[in-house]
Image (cartoon, rainbow, N blue to C red; front, side):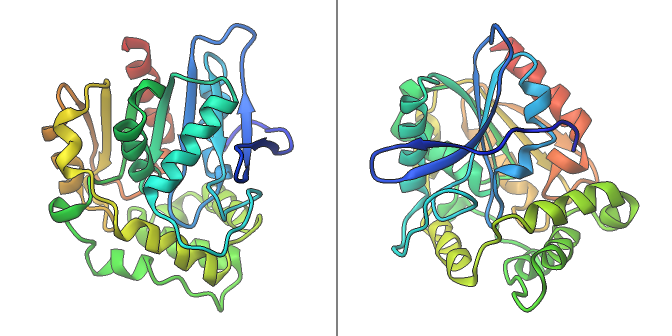
Length: 275
């Protein structure tokens, strides 16, 4: 989790304000927008922004109702969150952008590409799914991930949750990464109500019928030991998006951005360089 980021910045998208982090070189070779997953915030990309920010204008947002972004008391969908991301890209003059989304962030990235293809230069879909009837459900460990224990402190809750969804033993073997995960979770932690709204947003995600229409260059990244969004979901995306590239990480769980951070950064940077 290298690199120091500045204080959060804020972007008004009309109906709400989104918080974001940004790193950019003097002469960026494009824009990259990072979209985080369920229960997480933009700080989860601290292992990526300094790396990608050496070459690209690298941006990571807090989704609505998350982190430093505006709260809401109404339900919403991943399509609504995709519209937020589209409004953000326009407001920031950051389109078209390479979109990198993990888990729920991948749901949002897919909806963004379906709804606003002119804003998307490429897609990197990490540990994610098309949803709908094609979705292969979590195993028992993955289901436990979706039931966070809010009686624990945010840091301890994150240690437990990430310990379940990453490869067995990763957190114990990598205490610095575990400490960073706990620290990130302790920043503006989700309440049970916010988590429930965000979880409900994922339940209606379904772009299965749209995959064949996606023409944007796409990279699918998945660990074959992911208990939450099973590996078969990545296989489905790679098989049904024309020309998609596929990176499989053996023995890796749901968070290759941390579990295989160096290889992930190198692989995605290589993909962006070919687009």
